[in-house]
Image (tube, rainbow, N blue to C red):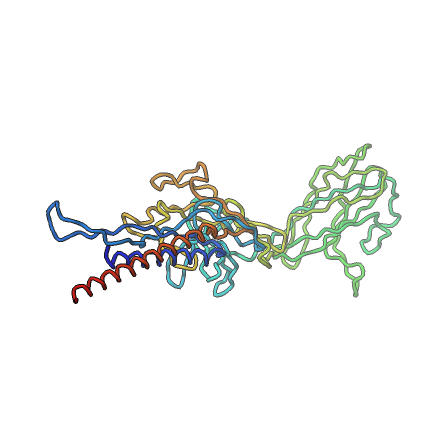
Length: 444
C-alpha cells in the first residue's frame, strides 16, 4: 500500500461524508431526493505490455454519486396550489430567463401576477409550471386537448357573462284566496295576490330584477302572471312600469298544473339589448294550503373573477379547476408530467431542479410526457394507458411530498464513513512513519 492509496481512501470517505451531510441537511426540504456515494476500486497497470504485466491497486474512488428517486411521504398543506406526485414523474418547469426546461418533484406553486396579462403558476423561484391550456373560443367552460402539449400555465382570471334565457319557478298557490277587486297595478299590492322576485342578467352581465305578480282572475282553477323589469313602486319621481302579461296558469281539480311549460318567451328591454326569457312553472301546484315558494332558479350569470388562491382545486388527473365570483367553476389547465427511461441520470441543478443528460450511453434516455394517472411508461419508453403505477403518478392537491431522506439510515452511514476516514487517516500515518524509518535507515 502507498500513501496514494491511503490518500484516495481519505478523499473518498470525505466525499461520502459530504453526501451524507447534504442528505441530513435537506431532510426537511420539500421534494428533496437523497443521494448515495458508491465506492469503486481503482487499479494501476504497470508499463509492461505482455500478459504478465503486473497491475497494482491504486486506491478507491467515490466519484459515483447516485440519486435516490424513491417516493417521499406525502403531507397535507394549507395551500390549494400545493401538489404532490404519488408515483413516478416530475413536474415540468420552464425557465424563461435561461430559456430552458427543468424538472422537479417540489410541488409548491403560487400565482404570479408579474409581467403577464394573466397570472401564471410558478415555483417559489419564479419558474413556470407547464401543462395543457383549455380552448375557450367556442365554449366558456373550455376543452383541453387529450394530447400533452405543455406550455407555461397562465390562468384566465375572468369568466364571461351569460344572459338569462330561462327562469324556473316551483311553488304552491293557495286555492282558497279570493280574486282582487281592482284591476292589476304593480304599484298597488291590493291588485294582486302574491309577488316574487328573480334576479336575471343581460348580455354584458348586468343584473336586473324580474318581478312576477300572481293574481286570481276569478276562476277556481286559474291564475294570471304579470311581470315587470326593474320596477320600483316607491321611486321618486314615480316610475311608469312596462308590464308583460297576463300569462295564464291552469290547474286540474287535483291542483296539478295543466298548462304546457315553458310559457312563451318574454321580450324584456334593457340598456344592453332585449332579453328573451321564458318562464317555467313546472311542478307548481294549487292546493288549499298557504302560498309557498319552493325554488326560483335561472340560467344566467354576470362576469366572474378569480379573487384568491383558495378558489382552486387540483384533481388526481392533473386538472386544475377554479371557482369564479359568479359561482361558475371550470378547468383552467391540466398539468403535464415528465418521466424518463433512466431518471437516475438526471443532472442536479440545485434548488430541487434537474435537467436531462444527453449522453447516448448513460443519459436520461427517452423523455415521456403524460397526464397524471393516465399515461404509462413502458419498456423502451413507449406510452400506454394501463396501470398508472407503471408510468405517471397521480396528483394530490393541498399536499406536498416530503424529503425521502431517512435520518436513521443517514446517521448510521455518517458513523460508518467517519470510521472509514479515521482508518484511512491512521493508515496514512503509519505509512508515513514507515517511510520515515526507511529514510533514516538509508541515511544511517
